[in-house]
Length: 149
Image: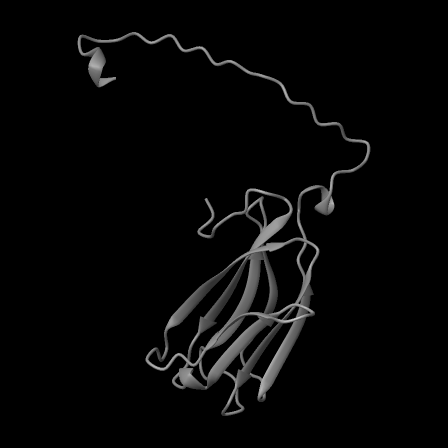
């Protein structure tokens, strides 16, 4: 089972930002944007040095392009074991890392497009899906306490 939220549709992904903070967590800021505007942002983790932060950003449509940017006001990225990672989860519980890093100057930026693993984002034209009813029958042998079953 996936430790992350798994979308129920092939048309969306669940997006996450993971940060292993260093001793200067208040100097880190990040944002997620599409071509028009900022969608989500975070940072300046004042009271959380060396914490592991996992931010679930929510559901996003497949086939859209996003820009993830991260900045460090001190200009040295993460120290020691610190890092950042941006990834999304598809409906088959596959995790795709789209941005990651540790050392960067004042800013790092990554552009990515979300994709689905369901038939390559859309159904092939030669596939026909059919729905049918199914019945399940169970034969239960009850003991002397059927109300507990």
